[in-house]
Length: 85
Image 1 (tube, rainbow, N blue to C red):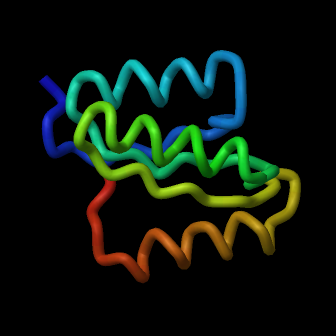
Image 2: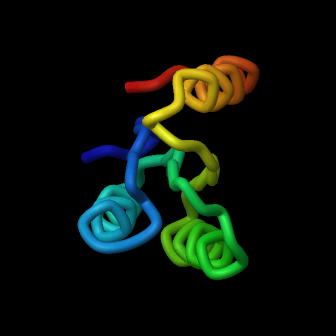
């Protein structure tokens, strides 16, 4: 259903955001997982989901209350040349 689609998920560190990453990945989507904290646990979560569902998970760290942080995350996505669906 979502195989090969590229989706941005905010709040991917825990709760609903983390569950959204799992659900989308289980349907074949590649995900830009945005979190205000990219600690070891979050990076391991992204790697595990990527391997489990054979999709690409791109962890991004940023704070959506900071325009500079949002710009930085946007630049990372644009630099990858991967379209967002």
